[in-house]
Amino acid sequence: MPKLKTHKGTAKRIKVTGSGKLLRERAFGNHILAKKSKSRKRHIKTNANLSGKIRKNLKTVLGA
Image 1 (cartoon, rainbow, N blue to C red):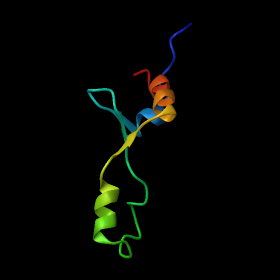
Image 2 (image 1 turned 135 degrees about the horizontal axis):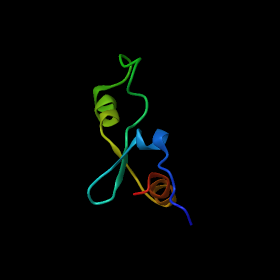
Image 3 (image 1 turned 60 degrees about the vertical axis):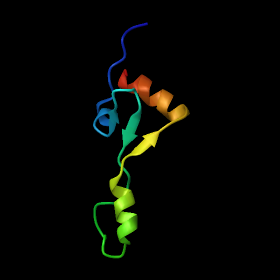
């Protein structure tokens, strides 16, 4: 089977850690922040860990 090309759109959005975990940024953190609570905005700033079947598919797409 030939080598797969890295999906560049996905590569720009997902970070692969040294241990092989996949991290993504959370949504809803760009605008209309006045109505959101401080704790909610703090939670939005943290990265989310990807797991399960989607992680397996993304690792294939990223070539990681």
